[in-house]
Length: 114
Length: 110
Image (cartoon, rainbow over all chains, first blue to last red; front, top):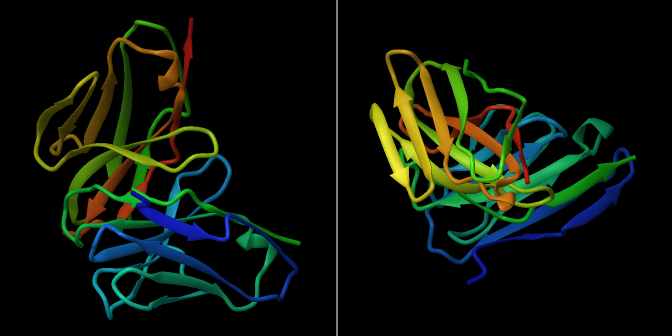
C-alpha cells in the first residue's frame, strides 16, 4: 500500500522561483492537509481540504496556494519562494474531517530556498 | 488561539516507564492526539483521547483530563526503537485540523 505519496522528496529553489508540491493518497480519504515543519518545532497547518472541492486556510497560509485536483490529489504551490519557506513539507490525509485525531502522513518534501 | 506545552527532552533507560506530559490552551477543544516521529521520517499516529480517561494500546497509553487541560503519553517497557520525537496535538472545532506541540525528544539508553 502506497498510502500518501509526495513529490518531489527534495528541491532547491532560488528566491522568487515558483514550484508545486504534489500529494496523492490511495486510501479513499476525504480530507487532506499540508503542514510544514521547521527544526525543533512541531508541525504547522498551511492549508487543508475537508472534502473534494473545498479548501481552507490553516495557521500559516501566507505565500502558499493549494488545489484539490480530485479526491486523491492535493497540491501546494509556492508562487514566489522566500528563504523563510525553507522547511520540510508534509502532506496528510484522514478518512474525513471528523474528530478522530488520526492523520496519515507522507514521507515529506524537503525544500531549500536560497 | 491554541498553544501546547510539552517537555523538550526526556531520557529513560531501556525497560523503564516514561511519561510525557502535555498541557494546552485552546478554544473549541475537541480531542488530544499523540504522534511519533523518528529522525527524518513521517509522523505516525499513536493514540487519540476525545473523552477524559485512559486509552491503552499495547505498550502505549494516553490520558486526558479536559477540566485540567492536560494529557500525557505513557510508554512502558521502553525499547531502543522508542527513541524518537513525540508530539501532542489538539483537534479543535470538530475536525482533524490539528495544532501540534513543539515535540519531546525521547532518548532511550541501554
